[in-house]
Length: 111
Image: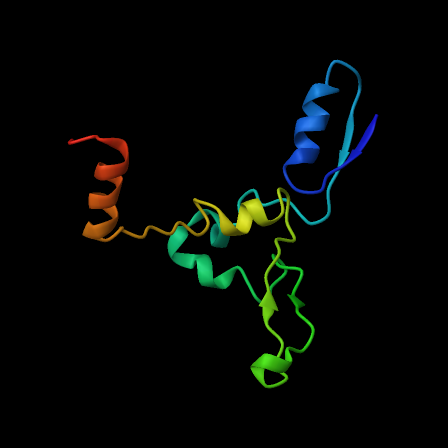
């Protein structure tokens, strides 16, 4: 079997076929040993305009005055999973107290 990976689902297919010989193809270089990907503080060095990114942009947007927008997509092993998920770019946002009060009402959990 030859599996050409597109997102994580390709790995699921390859795993299910692993009882047989499987060749997995993926675009991009290895992310092993790439400090920019492994150290969260260095996340801004991953994209845009780097070898770790496909350097895509959107078409020009009329509602944005004809500008295009960067569309970062990982160009390394595991694709955007390597460049946008922890440990590469961990993001933590604390909810407001109103959010937690609403959760309490919805779930009935007083803890």
